[in-house]
Length: 409
Ligand SMILES: *[C@@H]1O[C@H](CO)[C@@H](O)[C@H](O)[C@H]1NC(C)=O
Image 1 (cartoon, rainbow, N blue to C red):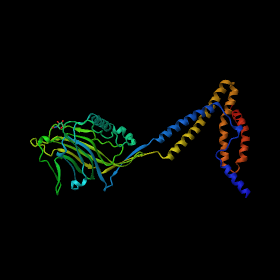
Image 2: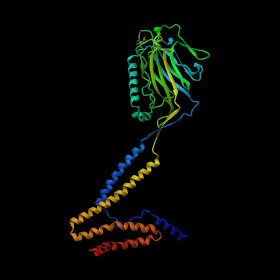
Image 3: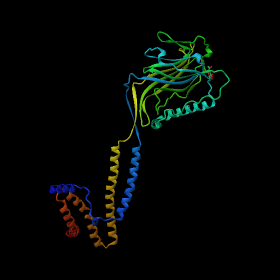
């Protein structure tokens, strides 16, 4: 039993890849010390950089067909039109031919067209920031996705200065739940009257001069709020010079799934093209005056995913850095030490003496390698052989070089 255990212990011992060198064999030098300090500094710097790199996250964007066919689309609006609410009607008409009332309805509130100074500042801020975001989106989008802010601007402040005159505008706001098919959300003159097939807008008591589709878009977004999404129409303001104007916005809604460390959820982005013209039957420009949002849903879904480098990669790189620098600095310091030795020998000592010393120092590199080899190849008898090589090498070291040059010289 005891013998077995001893044998097992011996085997394990012989497998030791980190044999300790006895104190007498250790030699310290100034170059070695310098290199240790330098490599330690380099190591620390690289490790810090690596940690910083690991802390950073990256984004991937993938496109796939949108497979969610039961989902509803929410449209969030807050629009002010320069006409009293009694003249205004808003509703949705889509490809399903569904009754207009089933989508829900928007709140309507009579108000004044002209904003008070605080509100004006806020609205212009929205306008400026939004135009900046639209222009610079490609350079700042990662920042936006990361930010976690779903509402950069905040809400419009309440009106503090109440004008004396009559309310001349209508604010429409709220959320409509619509089908995820192409459709048309519009604001026109006259109240909506549902008909068996479709609907009509009743505008009989209106004078031509009552028509004014000047409008301001405070909010127009689809789906639930998510950070990183820019709504291009927010901050849009159009002044109608003529009474009969039609504004058309062609909107393509892009389903977007956001999965970042600050937010996870589905939402929608949109892109828009805008067109406006005067309706004048004499000039052959036909149609109904109003504001039309013609939307369609993109077949492709965008997925924005934020992710980290895996921990295992990070650890592997750390090991690579530490081990790599350790080994390389060892090699270099040995080489430099050798070089220093060479030079000092050549300059300080006499020629023939120096030659011997110089050559003697060269093979010094070898013995450790043979030692290691011996211990690796014959693990069972490593103990005795090690000692024998140690004891036998010094003579060959000294004798080797002194013997070798003699035949040549
Ligand atoms: C519509 O209303 C706006 C704001 O009150 C005004 O500036 C504009 O001149 C009006 N347009 C027409 C055609 O009356």
